[in-house]
Image (spheres, rainbow, N blue to C red):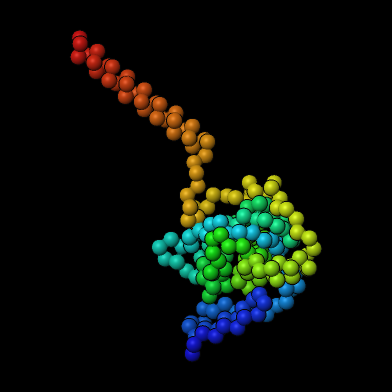
Length: 197
């Protein structure tokens, strides 16, 4: 039986013929319900999509980190950069199909010290219609909370981009290199003196 996809704003119901538990099934909800169920709702641009955490063997449930430059906060408190985790595959209700440099309205939930989202939560491209609908439900958006950036932007080993070295790393490298150089010079001078005597 072919896969059947039924779309409802902005959730989806997917029924597949593969093994049980393979498909993601979302109950159709109104925008007001999606806003009520989300801890944080914000608009932003995806700037990085990490690799699944599973390493060589990837499961559809392995988390993927989406780094988002936040432009407007509709609900909750979010920093100017937010990292949102979701399952790697849409079959497990993950945010599969998101694209770097594209604007989205993100419906996220707080899970301990991280933000999570799913394809059932309402996250979708930031069309003018969706943004207007969210603003009608939540009121005028606010600017992101810059005080939360340090907490939310945590270096992630699963990220597809390497982070730049910190100032402490640079200082450590310089001091270590200087020590090695001093040892080499001292050894060379000692050898020259021994040869002269």
